[in-house]
Length: 291
Image: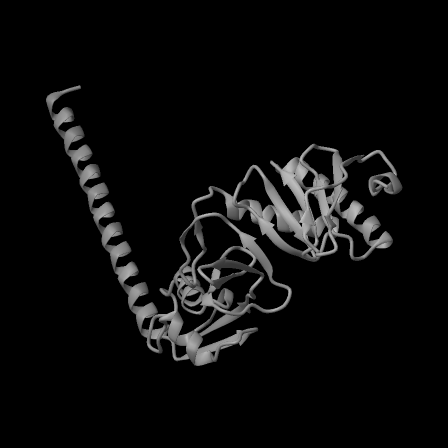
């Protein structure tokens, strides 16, 4: 290649590089202008002018709107659904969840789901009410409603209304939810108390008169233990609906009945029967009592 040819070739390559640079610069400026245009359009044409509240709630719509911290004039596109849900559920504890719906171009809707008190924790002469997930609904109340299960959760770190209760016992709330699901799955109802103060020695109380000692549990054996306990309770109720006692379910696949006995002064005595029960035996042998 001659000297002139080399010069011509280098010149052509420089021109190509310059054209590429110009195209890149133009594309960048075009992208910036497009982005600015989109932001301007969103800002100018998607401002909220209507906020509606629907769903099941004990609160007035104005209370929910105020708790959301969303105002008329805010941009519809840029509001955070997660923040709205957190603001409302923490400020108004009896709101369980909020679904946020954008109605373009200027409307927003909060679909509210309520939550109810399921558990009560006694502390210092008062009760703290919790929903099924451990969220604090009320603190330091003197009264609890019907069908509320009493909890013993051990030491409480904090119980702030609108937030989940914080406990010293690790994973106690997760275990409580597991127990609730297992009871539902095996049809065990009327649990009036749950003792989770010792995660390795869990106890449930049925109708305030029959204690189910579960011991240490996991997802694999929890439902089986409760199903065996429910079977024993069903048979005991058929024989005597006022039966009081304990069903020890700490050994997988087995149960041990201990009937509570009292003197004429109705003082509870430690004497009891401890007939073993296994999953393979009949209901009659499961609930056999000592003579």
